[in-house]
Length: 283
Image 1 (cartoon, rainbow, N blue to C red):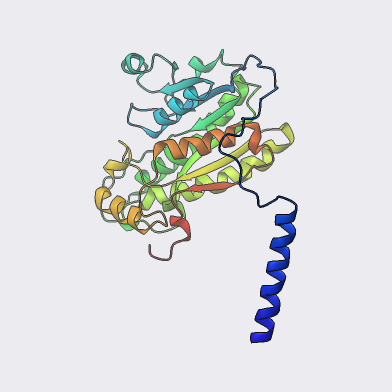
Image 2 (image 1 turned 90 degrees about the vertical axis):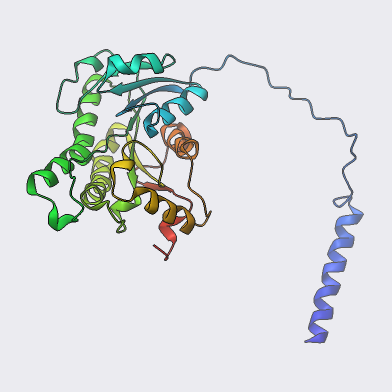
């Protein structure tokens, strides 16, 4: 073993001498002049126009995504059920009214939208008794609001907006793992992710991509209705590989990537932005 080690060390020394002889290992002078960028400056066109569906308030993840996209050159449209109340907090975004199962007429003239972000998630389940304590009507309404609405919104949007090329839906690890309190919404999220895969297949020959971002636990108006959310949020954050909660900005950055041409070959995927929590065995 000693002879082998000496032979290996000798090879390393020879290779280092080879690199040094050709100046590969020479230190870079501190006063080296920076390279000149000879590219011509050109006017930067908007990255695209994105419609973020299901923005409830300034504290919602949808609003954070809209803000991020606007900061990075996107024209943005947000849809909400309370257009009048929302107008005063979103001057930089075009605001349209959309209430699932209601009218989609306010979207009629948005034929220049290139990306759709789906942020609808709600449940009328108020019980803390889990799935066995959930009534049939509560369960079906949750599935309708948090899964079928994805199909309905995409269908109505594509009828009005022929230029949509990328769709991104939001999910959560509760659709794959058992997260206390997530119960019926977890079932709806599991259905949402499979729905996305089927839609990606159906829309692929039209050049339309559909992907899901499975976001980490965030303190939003929707999440706080879950039983013991603060406790669950703290536990999930500590057990992620990053040992912290993810930020809205981190999730929004992944959404932007999926909307852009940089992800042009990706569709039907679930992208996890949860600090590695989906790989943890400590749930």
